[in-house]
Length: 453
Image 1 (cartoon, rainbow, N blue to C red):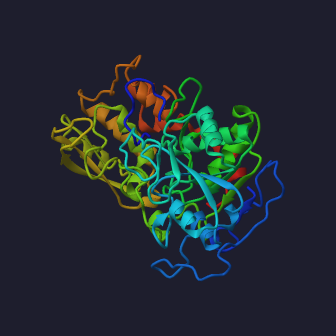
Image 2: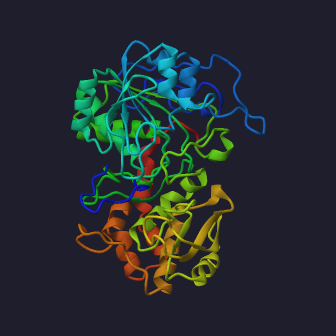
Image 3: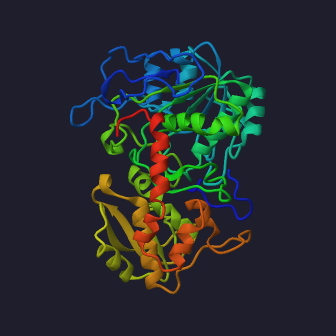
């Protein structure tokens, strides 16, 4: 994932709506726009049971998995389930995997699990997966689905004999975080096999705002397979609705026969993750905190440079630096007075990845007001300052690259960001370049949103 190390070869990497009739999560949507299935019925799986509270005393956010578990998984009973999940797919009260909880309940038939990058149990590092095996705890076969395209998913679905696909992974709301493309390919396969698709929804930790450039023709890859903006700012359930309405007819030959989203209750999409009352489970080894996720939409672009993006430290995507960087970078950035952040001069030695074993000068990006942070704009300012200060600043290259900066083009969705930066553009110029396409994307995604913003 970007979040993963880029390969040096191929860039390929690996509703019936059960609505929130309680709390702030009761969005205006009453169904799936254009959904071919019957009019959705709404349920409250909590049945008025006491909810958890936030430290301030309000009702705590309840993810879709918690709501389904509270109703004894009745929304998933009667069919053979294939579950796409990883360690983030938990029932919050007990902090156990939804697969463990489902099997333990005896109420549903979990026929298979499909493990994405890092695996179902999370034993694999970036760019790796768990091989197909029988899970010792549950006895369920776990299939290696890392990097699987629709044809492979269709084969796996047939082999496992599943009738309903369940997706439950904590996403971060960013185009190059690859779990959303695992869902995308699985949805294409589900259309072809005419399988029901269910998303157990979770909050989007970066907030519900969309931002950044749109993916364009010629730049799609495993870290951006279709035309969404860099920070898409949707929950997995909202994004599944968007995929189904906007992409499935052309990519899969039709829409899903049934798409169900079990919504998050007591939730607004602009809620900070720290205010949800939910535990943060690492969705990948280099996403240790919700603060990391808040910056990642921007600072992941440092993967494309010769600076360390903090891999090999305890603060990936927050510590950024290189051996040639000094105190001037932090000083210049703090003069910009960028919203929500402060740049502390920092020195660190990565234990792996870029600049391994070398002392790097740079910054730690501190979140002062997380709700105000503009991560992509912030990163544009950081790159402009590097360009202006240091002759050593350069793009990271790979043997397969046709030209320097190709990885930045894949991450940003076109060559525009890179060419503007190289031509001496300001951060304002760069950000202004995507304003029209961002407005259009916001208009297109509006019918598929489930939560207030």
